[in-house]
Image (cartoon, rainbow, N blue to C red):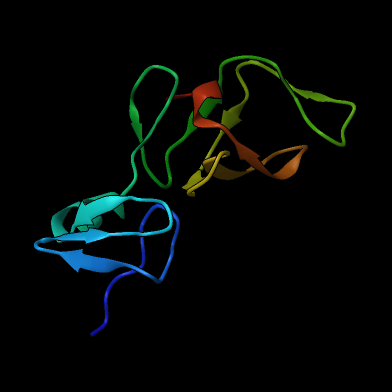
Length: 110
């Protein structure tokens, strides 16, 4: 029998309990419908607008850039973003800075 890994901790030691799956390592419980819904994540900007791949956003405040003496200025436009799962959930390329990851809470959709 091939059971799905835990969506929370990715443990392979899951088991069935009726219609639910249970992870013994982190105690997470879910059913198949929840697993399908949880694979799609929603990323929102600072104003609550839903972002999607290819959107153009603007930085809402000056951001310090690690490893650089320059700061990313407020109002900087970032074109063609790509959404990723993680703490910094936007991958992008910014003119003058190169490839970078941003947090969605510091941008607004244009």
